[in-house]
Amino acid sequence: MSATLAADTRPADGRISQLNAVSSRRVIDPESFEWGSMRPGAVIGRELLSVHDLDLDLSEEELDRLSREQVASMLDAGVRFEAALTAGFALQIAEAPDVTDPRIVYMFHEIGEETRHSRAFVRLIHELAPTARNPFERGPAGWFGHRMMRWAVSQPALLTVLILGGEEIPDLLQRIASEHPDTDPLLAAVNRYHRQEEARHLSFARTVLPELWAEAPPRERRRIRWLAPRIIQVLFDTMVHPGVYRAAGLPGWETWKAVRRSPSRVALRHTATRPILATLLSTGVIDAGRVPRPWQHLCGVDRHGDPRPGDVPVPGLRAS
Ligand SMILES: [Fe+2]
Ligand SMILES: [Fe+2]
Image (cartoon, rainbow, N blue to C red):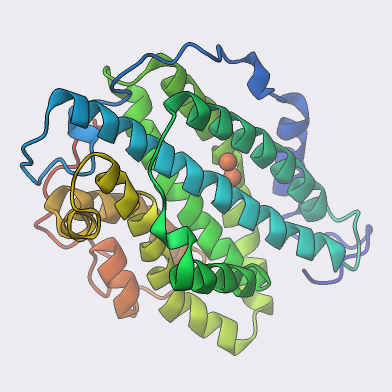
């Protein structure tokens, strides 16, 4: 965050002050939801299960269990992602030259909103009662992942691109789930609440990215072009971890690898991540015609950023 004295205004100040005003007016406490009302059994439609393409021979009970474990895994990932975001923002606040900068005030709002989201997610996880253990949170994978997280959150421009990833992907998943007739009503209500507040967070990230990009050293810019898409792909692939499949009686790693490659999941990844690239193209972080290969792979686009044909329709996604 660059030095800003209160009197020294920058072009984005007005937009950020508007976001501050909206966040001040709309404070939703997660206690207001009807906790305890989640239904037993399946909580999302069968077509929204990550194993949709795999043609597995599972009983109705196993499919129900899979739906609860899948949703719990994604919520758990959401809590951890929001905590990493909070850590990164906290570092920027602690080191800010001027804590009255509207950007810093907005970070306070966003941290407040994220902690409420996380409390809602934790309550949903309680109601889902998952049993799966996440192998990515333990052993060498956990050690490496946690160190990567600490390294990434201390780089404001890179963190902002990862925030775009961590917010655009759930935005699509929660939109699909909240509009699907088979989604549990409590889960759908939390999804709608979350998307509404995340829309402001996405707006903030898009607004500050050009400033942070202008201030970023060359090595951080290279990381955004070449490494960030790989980290975002890991975020996407690990939201539903191998333990989820094991809990439903399936071979954990084998199923996880098959899901990653399955046409529906690839199409979902492409659709969920294209808005991130669109922001990078519109803010000049990446030039059309020179989209780096890892971004092309993540988003299923060519070097101009245009979608490559061949994706299957995303299950459950209706035209907006
Ligand atoms: Fe959130
Ligand atoms: Fe957020």
